[in-house]
Length: 594
Image (cartoon, rainbow, N blue to C red):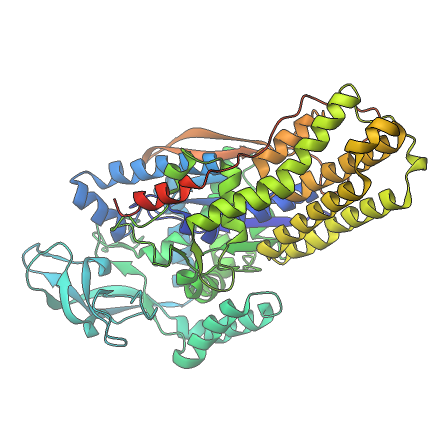
């Protein structure tokens, strides 16, 4: 039976362009897994969106001297363009600034309140007498009282990764230069995570058999060392989701609390746009559904501990408030968090322009070339490094030489010598070597599939490339280029076998290399595409108009060995990939930091 698979991908802040570290950290792995499950015939829903609230967005607007909504939409539109270019097939890429997201987030808040997991408390927060307002946490920087890092935010240190108590920050200063700061009392709602700690620990231990050690280790380690402590879920802000409590005007839901709710609100919005208003339940009110949350390592604790706690605490009360019945919410199945990608041995830095920006890279390189390098170099268990020399080498020696040349030379040779058709051989006459190769390729659907199921994407791609190498070795031994001159029947058996192997390899490579796999699919003469189409749609609600990225899928099961028939008509083939010149390395290095 088809499985219900939810792919929920980290929501990027609307304050900066997306670079290759972001892409390989969450967006690309989520898309690869989604494409695999679609090929298997599973019911897949891929969601994400622009995190349009929070202080990073407000700070970006302040710097540009423009309204926050204008700035968030500028970045949001850029994200849509980027994901279309890279082929990240979102069923819905939306934004947190929608009427639907407001309603869902407020319903989660009210459910937690109803279930007794919230309390009100006064706390001290940094206040700017000059600006006459409380400053959001990211507006305040200072020295971390745990590790001594001098540019820590008042709520979290990016160096040691610890959540901080704002009042303990050393030498606090306003990023906006609003003069001396004062600690003043302000009242907020707190989520009492301590009450949910036993359930969160149980959840993590149950997931330990398939979640990554890096994820489980960090999550359980922090809870064992520090416990789950109450955290404020409101802030003194005027840009965000209003607190749904009378008398709390001028305060909004804290972005860490409401942004992750997008994994729930986006499927609900998708259902509404698809005229299937209750379809979201198949992933969120279904205990058999599998939810994968793709994130970077800096967000592990939020997604493995705080987010499940929100879901457990809201539970069926959310469904009662929002949907009119009492059904438990489905908890995440896996959180395959990646580590960081650096650049030429240094940490990626937007402020120093030390980055490979996604949209910029697409102006010079084909998306599958970028997707390939980002996958073979994916930081699954430890940090990796984008190196321009390695990018060129991997492209030329693996993508072009091993896979691209294999597909092109066999198809071109066949198209020429068999008049645009697959050789019309009798399959019962296939030799042992032919059958052995096809059996090896057929087994690849299990081996590559197993790695994809476990979200071991580098290993999965490596297995597919090994199979391509096996076909190259088979061709070297059987040499159809020579046999065609003396024994065309023998050459026909070899070419048919190689074509059938390539036809299968095309599917095995397609989650990683969708653009060229689709072209290759067309060369074989198939009319039904492997994948569907992406498109942008404009949506309006009471908050205004926003654009969303959507995906229209294709019905069918394609994750299976080739069914290529003797005599099948082919279309004119062509090269799949481009060889890169060595001068690219120094040209790209010269661009860095400019």
